[in-house]
Image 1 (cartoon, one colour):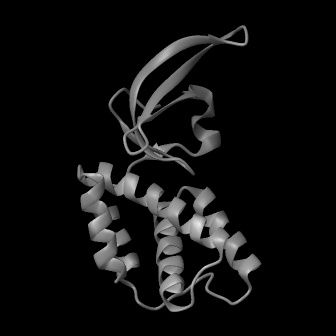
Image 2: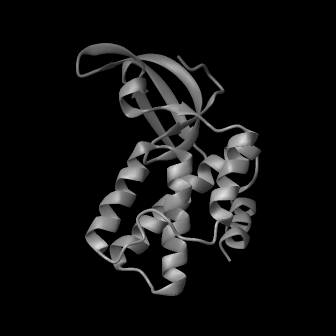
Length: 160
């Protein structure tokens, strides 16, 4: 169970901070909820405590995890779902995003950013890249207490 002030990642949404744990009545049922704020989107979410495991809520990575992400982003060789079939690539990358695993999200950003540079992306893949970038930026910003712009600059340099 997380506590108020914890920095957590909600897969497919990004990283946020638990601002409160409150009991609320929704549809006639009283439940305890995490009240989470996502700083980069200025969005708040209520998540039932019992859903924590189901949705894959996890802590933001530590500095060692950030270093591993940087290593993945620096990798010039595109691996993983870099084949030519757009549909297979898209599904494989979507599965990685849904996992909520920061290393897999970093792989998606790396693969798609390099493919965009080399060959261009379809509209769907371009949207996926932007979504993956925002999820990655949100977690790295909270992990290192950086501003969004600092992380964006760091990403640009790593992927150049």
